[in-house]
Length: 119
Image (cartoon, rainbow, N blue to C red; front, side, top):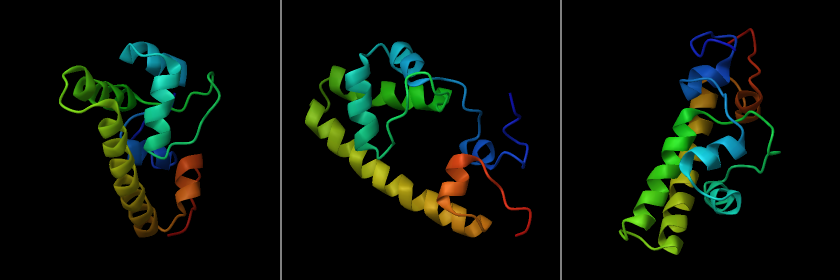
């Protein structure tokens, strides 16, 4: 497992922690069925990944739990929580693009963990 501070793993640097969980593990840790977790992930703009792909961090578990708490505590209904997830996903996408641009890489390189040796 790579050190998230290792600059050769740009995605770890940006995420602040290593990807160590599958989508199934995230859903289980959040106490929700996969289809409901995926609904939030799609709203946030995340791509569907295979159930056994290690693409998630502990922060993903925490984020999913926060959205679910908003619904469980009746602060928002499910549709409002999905709309909020969509809004946050769009804002996060813009921030990620800006960060990647500042680092001299494309957002796709960040997602794939590829780093150009020259900046």
